[in-house]
Image (cartoon, rainbow, N blue to C red; front, side, top):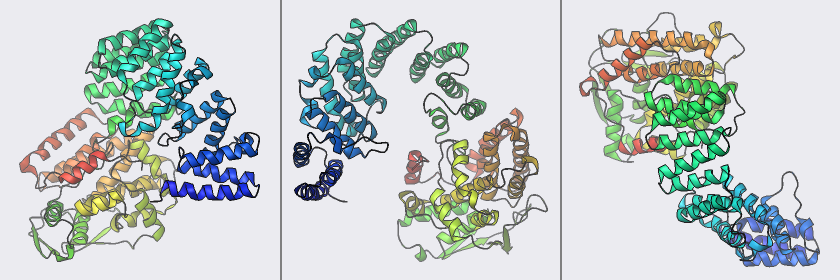
Length: 613
């Protein structure tokens, strides 16, 4: 990794050369780059001062155009402050911090000088602090706080200079709270409300009480905020969220209901209400209703994460379940015992009581090429036969060994799937949107990926899956390839569309991971298009019934995972949902299967997974 100080010194050398030649424009450009490498380095500010002397303040050398470079913005801020215009400079500096809060843009003497609080008006100080807080998480992680402490010093000096300015005290409280200074935040917020009672002041006070774990006082302050402005429904949502965080769901829902009575389309209340109702009873229709609302109201007041929070870590809603075959369990045991050793050294036989999913057999064979799989017998119904006649065939069988029927996918298909495939997603509509990248691939390529999954990418995720469970990567490829099929010929009406026909073939093909991947694509289609929900719910119910019928005669390794997938289908008949839950209960008992829990390292990885990288 490059040394920031060395990089800054290199840019400074070029800036000095340009200055010596009288080329102020190029000198300013190099200085701006130097600032991005070392924003508090004294030598950088010395050269900036030299530029200012040579160009009557130097401010015009760092113009603010539509795509201003952040180093130029920061340089202009420092020069404005030096020219006696600290308010303008401070606003630019705070904008740079809001854009890149990890950089120490404000760690310079003029920002932390005690007299700055007197040199700017309290309104300016409040505006700067409020704009900064809007860009920061609450709270800011401790490791990310040091570059922000100069602004806390500014807040202290401004409050000292203007001790009765209510807006400034509240904004200062908001910053202190984010930086972990809870007692200071509470003091400033209380003083702000005493100086100038207002809705916003009470909100800041309520948040400070909440950060101090003083729940009843927090609720009282927020309710006073409602009395100040009964039409600000965001405060209703804040109260609901606070109550819910402390386990008081019914009281929380009372507040969302009050907000929705005033405005049934107010986004904060709608999102909070759906999330809390799902927390209360676990009914899927709350999440589907929230997804519908998001689709119908794309211009929400701000970005919401309620749907993603509810789906995170949930099988199929936000995460791909791991496989449950005995052969996969054996692979995991070998990998756990052998560490990162050469898998080619693993030689021997693995005896299976019956056939398992062809994708599982292929994946284990690829991971342990020296392992010979021996199948004791073929139970009926024969897993090698599709569940319905006349469907598209992806596998051929040589006795008990599966082989792909299709040719390998194109290099472009491999490249795209390796960039996209991932075992987690925020929620089904987000997975659908992400898969649009595969719309340019042909159906043949997408189908070929199902039976010719490429190696995982050389990323932390890819290496973890290779080391602990390469079968999960295969399932990732299959799921995303099927999501890609959803974007094929989207102009065709659903009932007679090629995309539906292809996915139905895969759903009713041989019992395999591909069955699940295709059904997940259909379920995802139902999440994003209400008109297809009855059709998808019927398909899901029929596929579940078939699994149950087969499971009465022989083990079905995908039974539990498929049942969980069926429960993710919008508009599912309650009796079908109950049947799926019964199947999950039966399959989850120790006697029902041979798989072991996901290995500890991989399980921890899955808990940390987020889709967006």
